[in-house]
Image (cartoon, rainbow, N blue to C red; front, top):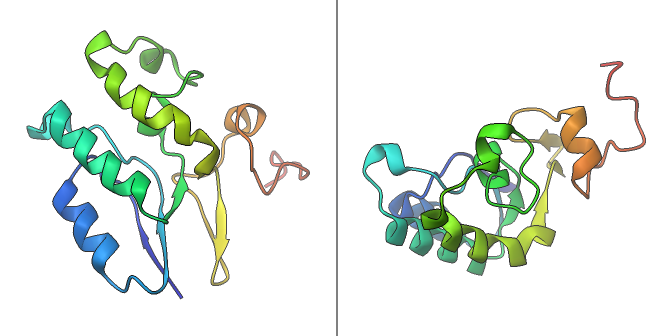
Length: 136
């Protein structure tokens, strides 16, 4: 059994509740760990939430918001992050190896919002990398 959540978006209260629930079983976060600035969050709150998640042993999947903070963002709007958000990148980049594009657990294949072929070419740990993803 696994506990699965998506789109925490820097909400530390949501992250704490998720991580504290049934800590003895696997926790999977389906991406979008950060970027709640439209909901009144601050950089400090985002960093606290991200730190809590990164210190956990949760399985982490890429979300489009998370990719913005890597050194290889996949979409043009994300390639122009303001310097004020560099602390998020600085915290996330050392953990890039922990993130997955997809994760199979309990008979389910978990992704953030599907798997694009562009992501498949740029990110490691894609379980379908040897498949013809265009057929499906």
